[in-house]
View 1 (cartoon, rainbow, N blue to C red):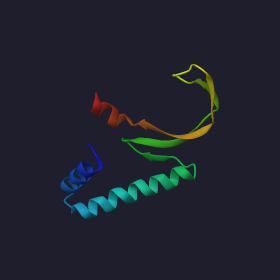
View 2 (cartoon, rainbow, N blue to C red):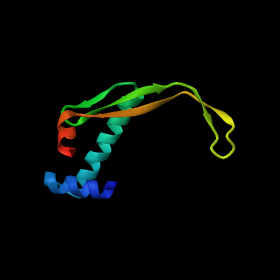
View 3 (cartoon, helix red, strand yellow):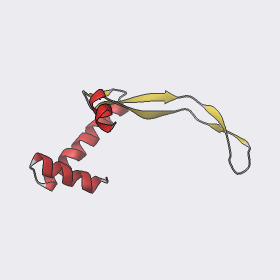
View 4 (cartoon, rainbow, N blue to C red):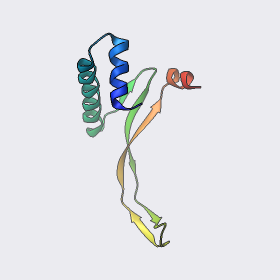
Length: 90
């Protein structure tokens, strides 16, 4: 499902226009992104939680040459599915 299909699905399930559904989805994405930038955790009970984790620096290998390369430390976004979402997907 891409963004346009998601907007269509939200609009039909919520009984709202596609424009309003797009605004709501964009607002959710922006708000979640801002919270994660600050290091906050975003938890939606039953659905899951988004959090930021620190991935340490490590040594990898260039697959073409086999030479070792240094991979810098960085922050990554993690998503942990909630119990209701997990049981629905089974």
